[in-house]
Image (cartoon, rainbow, N blue to C red):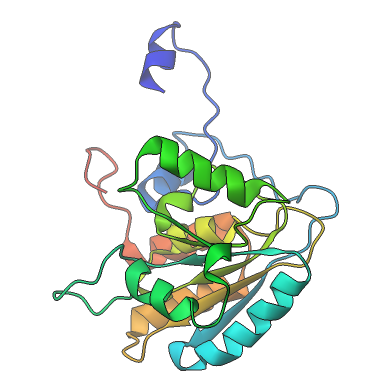
Amino acid sequence: RSKLVSKGNNPDILAMSATPIPRSLMIALYGDMKISLLKEKPANRLPIKTQIMSKSKKEQIYDSLHNILSKNQKIYWVCPLVEDSEESELISLETRYQELQNHFMPEEIAILHGKMKEKEKEQIMADFSNPDGQAKFLLATTVIEVGVDVSDATVMVIENAENFGLAQLHQLRGRVGRSELESFCILLYDYKLSKNGRKRLEITKNSNDGFFIAEEDLKMRGFGELVGLRQ
């Protein structure tokens, strides 16, 4: 972006964001940038239905996901870690994959994370994006947060959702609801749910408006330095 700006003499800039982070939002609200809000959804898009569920209800979720797969629709399941860690109780792709294999056909489950080689990631995404591809269930880290558009993916399950920030939850949820099909986002939380964690989940559940979510994020986290680099 800075390279593009340097090509001109004080050029006009249009910066786009699904959920501006607090510092960017504050700069906009103070008038250093003008705000244009795009509140309309593309034609035929339905609001994403968001639910907050305890991880104790996984069996119930699995039953619902079988129903989704029977409609030839696809599913994302996001985990915060690639591998198990002694330092963290968060769920890893490794652990969740072992359990999912007991409920779904292993050949239909694809795994995607940032430690993979670029060609391997591209191949997995191409298979998942293909309506006739073998992968129906994408088990991934947050590498799918942006730039992923699969129209027949209608369910996003976010594991340990209470540990993600508001902007990240909103961006991840935005991977579904990209066609006229009804879509769902399930925010799975652990038993140890902090007050702020609960609040982030409630805000995400109650709104699909990225700018509103950014404003709530600003209230919760503050805006860092307006003049300076600290977020």
